[in-house]
Image 1 (cartoon, protein in one colour):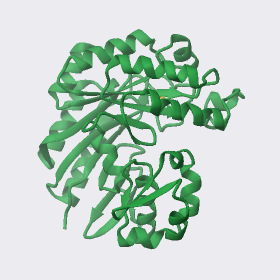
Image 2: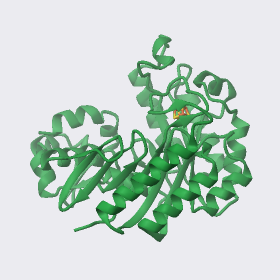
Image 3: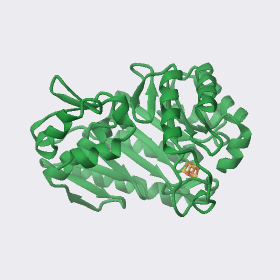
Length: 351
Ligand code: SF4
């Protein structure tokens, strides 16, 4: 039996590394695009041979900085996907981008190749903060790109980072008011986390306390004019990122490109891709249910208490903590208070 799979394509190149970044990406503005694209085309063929001409509800080019890619290579990849799979009229096709890598002409070329959703790494609207984060663009570059994208017939999302050393509830409230003025239909608000082996990891920064972070998190929900639908994601109803929602719902997706994860479903067995092309191994039913619990609880709508999920969780714990977890109409979901301590909840909930 085949089911629809989404496609994630990883493009692990950036102009330079940001000070906080622990993503799988490397600073290289002029990689060998021909070789990288050929690798992606081969992987698409590999999965098409394995899965057949299945429906592809979403395609997501993530990074790294996929908007660095020359549009001719991007088009080749899209043509290959359309040839080997069934791309639907309403397939969501997202590309992640950074300001400074995408002028109007290139944006139009990506749209001509099929992009209908642009995700922009804005991170801050303050030039000092952008420098501190190691970003290459300033706030007006970001606003120009948002403006340009919003004037086209595509969906636009922007990423922001809060919880910088100088941040408090007031500064975050102001950031949210400024975001409201931009009129986005989707944005992601990520708490700054300090990862080892990054420049920030070696700087001994004076970070806000957990309580201060929690206050900022509450301020975001109270000030942004978009409702939260996942721990860090906010969207007008109907503008949620379908690609990520599918992952959080435990759906199937093929990872393509170096470092790309994936969950593929072949002959009734779920497989985990190991991040380098065709290597994958089966996931047993319990581990798969645990994954669904971990990702499903990140979403405001939660997940269905299907038999595999019920078997993998401690229902007595869930029922004993109504301030953190709600069970309604056969679904379990995290409350607003629970979102703040999701890691703790999962540790207690999962068997
Ligand atoms: S642009 Fe994104 S992926 Fe690239 S270094 Fe910065 S944070 Fe990391």
